[in-house]
Image (cartoon, rainbow, N blue to C red; front, top):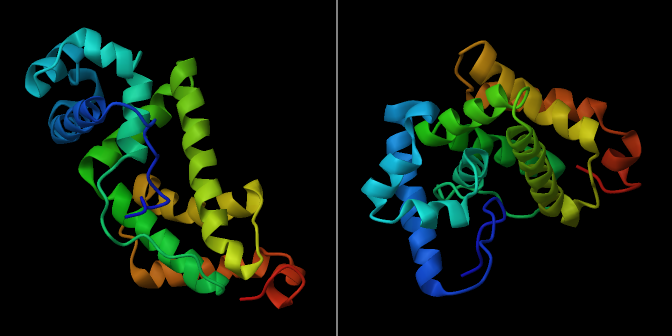
Length: 201
């Protein structure tokens, strides 16, 4: 079965190594909401996952790398959209998937931690950029059948209101909020993208 687009593809290799990675990430996902980023030490993680700290450092040389993989290799919630020709539908379903993913306690904690550390930690800053690039590329892949490809600004205008609602307003992102966000976002797209030049809605 093809891996969902929103999940990073682990480097192919020894299946035993991949099982170890998966086990460690599962344990980290369980611990992170309880311990917080500072409490998720490699000593604790190694003990709970039954691996050595050297194994952890081989896979994740720093905590930013671990948080990066926790975010992008999060649990498959089974709701990631399929590529489609209707921009509104793809964007709406993508935002709902984003909302549901960030609602997972470990993912939410990891996103907030990477964001908070980015100003003073170069590894976290790089991880944050790569997360954005990964999500942007995945959304454009979903939009390919429509002929529409969005740039960095258009991407930010789509997901920005959802993150602001969740992290700044501390409010709920309802389906109605997402519908309104997408409707407003569509008005910002170049008319040629929406009316047939590079793909329509």
